[in-house]
Length: 269
Ligand SMILES: Cc1cc2nc3c(=O)[nH]c(=O)nc-3n(C[C@H](O)[C@H](O)[C@H](O)COP(=O)(O)OP(=O)(O)OC[C@H]3O[C@@H](n4cnc5c(N)ncnc54)[C@H](O)[C@@H]3O)c2cc1C
Image 1 (cartoon, rainbow, N blue to C red):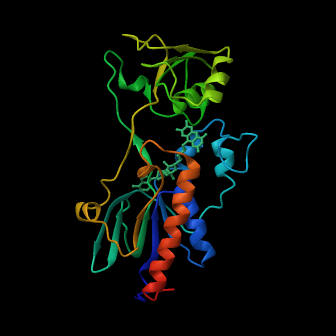
Image 2: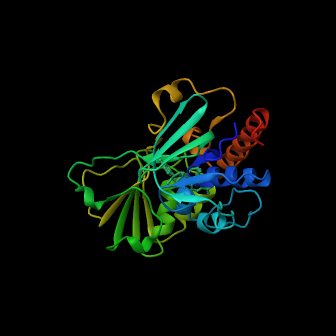
Image 3: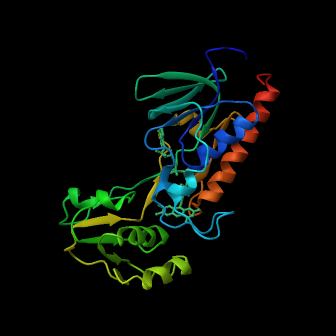
């Protein structure tokens, strides 16, 4: 198994799960090749105030917290388009036409928003996430959704705009401390059990309906993933409703440890 042009480990995604996996591998002397199509940090860059991550009880923004994670030494700013495996070697294709071979793969690709059609609203007024309120314009923003992400986005946007949050339900799914903060924020209005027929706001943020995007994994690999320890999926892309950074980090560490075990067993460490 000692082919010099073959990577020991390729990681797809540089959010909390991918970063944690890369860090753990580094501790074992492995420098994985990490693919990231966007900004390293993933969805966590959107989090306004994180208070449930161990070690930071006082609260911290996702951007600041993720900034404390060391970046992998080998970061490839490119989108992976296909992962397949033949004869125990993975082939990873990416959008720059690069084809990479690897002994093992960790998929940490998170989720993507489901594109939503809002009758009467042109696509240009719809957004699916909030990284920086300065990227928005106008005076009033609508946020659609009743969960933590919707309330967190409302808090971020309230630094510059007035915000209406519209939910089909009563916000009982949201974490109570965040709901209290929103209720105390004079620039945010909550509209309970109410999705209006039309929106007067300048922009509309859709903050519900994210799904794992796994179609980069070949059908064969996805339907019967190898059980030899060479292939792992971790973080939000497998966590269903339980999408939290600390869970993603734990998953990433576990995937890395199992990968090390695989590499040791087959003699490449
Ligand atoms: C508004 C908001 C607030 C939040 N607040 C909290 C909080 O307070 N506490 C908490 O624990 N969690 C919070 N979360 C959830 C947390 O952000 C996620 O659970 C965490 O980011 C998941 O990490 P991940 O690495 O699995 O996925 P992601 O963070 O989604 O990272 C996946 C990465 O993979 C990249 N990628 C995907 N496909 C490809 C490809 N084909 N090729 C190359 N790169 C690819 C993406 O660009 C992305 O950078 C919040 C989320 C949101 C939206």
